[in-house]
Length: 441
Image 1 (cartoon, one colour):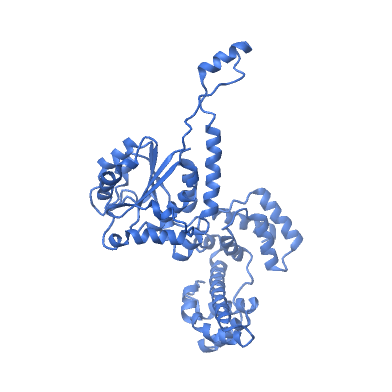
Image 2 (image 1 turned 90 degrees about the horizontal axis):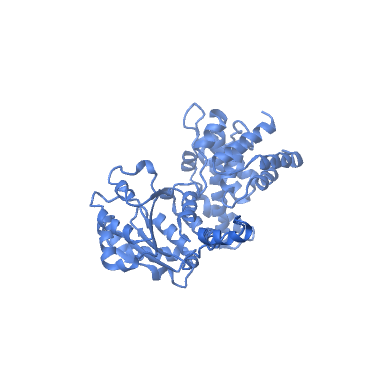
């Protein structure tokens, strides 16, 4: 396969993972390869990343796909160790040195010796790491690193970082070996970990959620800028036909200077009603923090959390501590006494919201409901939800579940969707696009 053909296939694979590299970026990448050549693989990786990536958060996916289409080597390595004990001794030496080439070679050897799962070219990174247990070498590696002049604590941190790097190289090598036997196209579709923006919100682990929370500030500012631009455009109002025709009399009946009605000057009010039960708490928390980062665009924001009853938690988001993780923890602590004992009860939650906080809704209020609409086979209480819809300026339900799962099992999505729009927000990308589109100006 020629380098040009491989580059085109590489770019096509990136696009399938949400990296929007077009013809101009592909041409730039081709020029990068002409200038840098193929001899220095890491320099080539950096050059292609500079040519093809346009947004933050895409590099992890890029690296995984790059390692499939421009692998470090082909075939099986020469396995020098005969037993697990011998291999672990070699691995400890590689971790102590920290050399990238030695760690890569150790990963290739480990996958070859301990990762095969069948005779059809299948390899497992999980099986390899379970056999090797590299985390148990941290103390030994830290001691070797400390003997080189590192402080004890720094040596242990360095050892942990090198073990984490080795684990990632094992995963890369396992993908490469499978791709050799089963085809790169198939493997990149199923074995590449999606970016945090494209991953299912309900399936994110703690590490990826923490990474997403760090993006809330920039993302909120971006959406706020977009809303401000929409508001500026909306200030012109709709065309006042009567005044426009009157003006046109001075230009022979040609409406050269349109007249506009004055728009309503008030910024909208927002109410967020959020399911904080275990299944969707992470989705609700992320959405709350995103809207909170945009609060200057609204005249008022009130936030309510529920499991089987509803509490107002607005003051938790108005605290001086700006750390999203600590704000989220305070919200969870507020609902924890009941959340640990009860399942979501949408019917009761909607009822208590109207009984206790009904005055939060007016004709100026836009309501966002965040939850999966799963009632645990209780009453959905569509009457109270209908009362909220009838009173508010607009109501939108953001559901983190895929639409294909609505109205399955204990889901009452259809009943709520019949009263007000319900939107699928299964990924961060979908949530961001939707929030920027439906929030009022």
